[in-house]
Structure formats: C-alpha cells, structure tokens
Amino acid sequence: MTDLKTLYRHRFDESDLPEKNRIWSVLCSDYFNKIIPANATVLDIACGYGEFINNIRAGEKIAIDANPDAQRFTREDIEFHNRMVDEISVVGNARVDIAFTSNFLEHLRSKSDLDKLFVDLKSVLKPGGKFIIMGPNIRYVFDKYWDFYDHYLPLSHLSLEEGLVQAGYEIDTVIPKFLPYSTRSALPKASFLVAAYLRVPIAWQILGRQFLVIAKNPDKSS
Image 1: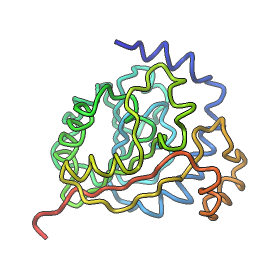
Image 2: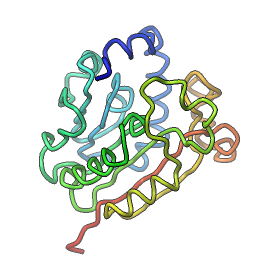
Image 3: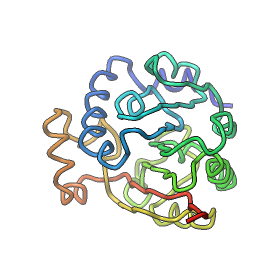
Image 4: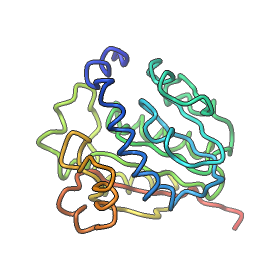
C-alpha cells in the first residue's frame, strides 16, 4: 500500500500552500460558488490539504481523505473523515447536495474501483445531487501523466462521461479543457490573473489540460 503521508510530503512543499490557497480562493469565489448553492451540503472526496473545501461557500462542509495528514489543514468547521474512499458511506445516506473531487480518480487502481465509487456515491448524494469532477485529461497530458508514482487510471473527458452514464448518472456539463495540469504549470498565480483566466474561456482552450465534468444523481421522484 502506498504511504500517502510520506509520498505527499515529498511531492508537495508545505510552503506552497498559501499560494495554492490563494488560487483556490479565486477558483471558488469566481467559478464554483456560482454553480454551488450557498446552503448546499458539500463533500470533498480526497480533500488533500483542503484547498477546495476550506474556500468553498457552503451550508455544511464534509471532507474525506485517506491521508491522516489532511486533517491538519482542514478548518475546524469541516467534518473530516480519515477513511479510504471505499468507505464513503460513513458520510451518511442521501445527505450530500454536491460532491466534489479534484485530481483523485487517476489514483484509483482500476475501473472496478471507479465503478464502486460511482455506486457508493449515489447513496450518499441526495436525489438530484451533483458530482463535480476535475482531473488530468489523458488526451492532453499523456506525456506527463505517468511522472507520478501513484497514477494508475488514465481518463479522458469522454471515457469518464461513459463511466458515469453506465453507472446511472445524468451528464450536466463536460468541459474537456478547464485548468492547466497543475499549479506549477502555466496557470497565472496572481489572484487577478486567475480571475481573468476564468472569465476568458478561449484561454482554457490554450492552457487547459484538466477536464471538468459535472454529473447528476437522477431524482426519480420528479
């Protein structure tokens, strides 16, 4: 089993966190807060060091991560679960309005593991709840994708869409190119430049290497 604490301490310098949080603060305020209701119950799957869940506006915040280090970086108002993703049911049945994950699905060992996550998450999501997914698009990062020891599952926006559909989700949004591959890449770092980037989708086509896919848990009562 991968030692997540050791791996991520090697990969991510804690001194980079303030800069990453500034970037995520703008991503949340200028993009995600516009598509996530202010009173929503939001779940961050594989929350990492809390860059998204700390900055998103929400009625209730929940985070889950297998790395025990993650809790040190999540704020006190966030319900944190140090669990593997296959234990996501610990969050509760039909509790979540919005589930979010960024740069996580590629760490799953197989399509079977991903299928299980899709199924388990449907029971955690409310009917009509949404699953927002960001991740490296193998179409555009095939030359760098395997530079990370714990990358196993290559996905494009199209293969992810098919996986979600066969698991019973409805597709809401598919953006093949959204953000650059990482905060160390071409994404402008200054807050006003990040905000400007988000306002100009043509820039996404030039610099974007990550997909953004949003799927909906069908509300069968409607």
